Image (tube, rainbow over all chains, first blue to last red):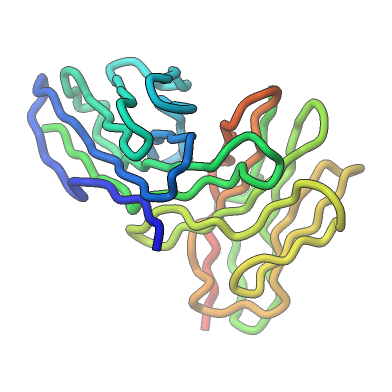
Length: 115
Length: 114
């Protein structure tokens, strides 16, 4: 069955270190998204991609970057981790632009703690 | 700009009673609306969506949602709640224009008491 996976599931890192969170989907979806989830804020979009070599900033993109070199993967990099980036990170994907294909499918999440 | 509001942080209901989780939206153009559920320590799971057609949409786990254009609402409902329905529920709307982004509400925690 198609799925979307994230690794690691839990990560503890120190302030100032570079961290990369992996996201891999086997749906063959064009669209991929990274969110962070924090109490009181719901889900906030960090970055997204509509296809290979395409990346776009979301509402909370400062301090984060992504790259899309193939359809399956959208790694999220924290260039210099800060305590404010302690959060749960979710990756999601969706098929495309037609009316029936906007629903997003989510990975299990990565809990990141920055100390 | 598109937006959704979930006015209740938490909804409490007894097992066996009907449940409603509220969602209102603001969009320009035709709304594409979604409900997701999140169980503890899990990712969000798609429940149902409204794109067009019948105002009553049926989804997974016995849930349904009623689209009401005049009230700009898309409330999630279930006739008989189960303890296992206890989870965090998110309403979402497709962002405007030629975009694949979804705008999520802040979530409503549903607690079903035995």
